[in-house]
Image (cartoon, rainbow, N blue to C red):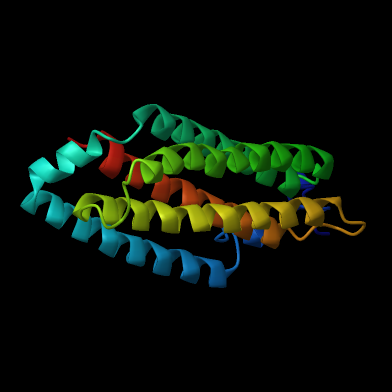
Amino acid sequence: MTDVVHNPAGRTGAGQREPGLRNHVPGDSSMWFFVIGDLIIFGAYFVAYMYYRGQHPTLFLESQARLDLDIGVANTVVLLTSSLFVALGTSAARSGKTADGVRLFGIALLLGAAFPVLKLFEYVPEIIAGVTPGTNLFFMYYFVMTGLHLCHVMLGLVILSFVIRNLRGPGAPRISFVETAATYWHMVDVLWLVLFALLYVMR
């Protein structure tokens, strides 16, 4: 006679995974391919920026002083907090708590939407003052890198909207899609942390 050991962790339900998948890499492999490729591209920009900063330290420091550090800090707090709610929302979705997931991802979306608004408050005065990518080497990298990142944020907001739609659907939510979206949003957050350090903080 074979004894059967009851294992609550072996049960599966809405948003729960098989025990064999507990150590899986979250999200679709295609998203990780995109994330790695994006990090390589931004990495090349970061290396080039550091090289030219070393060649023209005075120009970069004087130009850097024109940036609004307060807005940079606000954008950092906004994205970090948004990523926290994305992580909490993903955890709720995995546990089958879709209502909580919708609420948490909704908060993350609202916080993320504040980023482009704050960025406009930074861009517009600079442009009105005549500061453009053609002003000097620092501002060329500043506008290109932050502009490219802003495009990633806008795409991320669209993706988060689809996550909320996925969680609110009549059927069981696709947890792999939730994880894929979370992976992308966390990448956007990491990229901004590096940009904030390079453009606003480093002296």
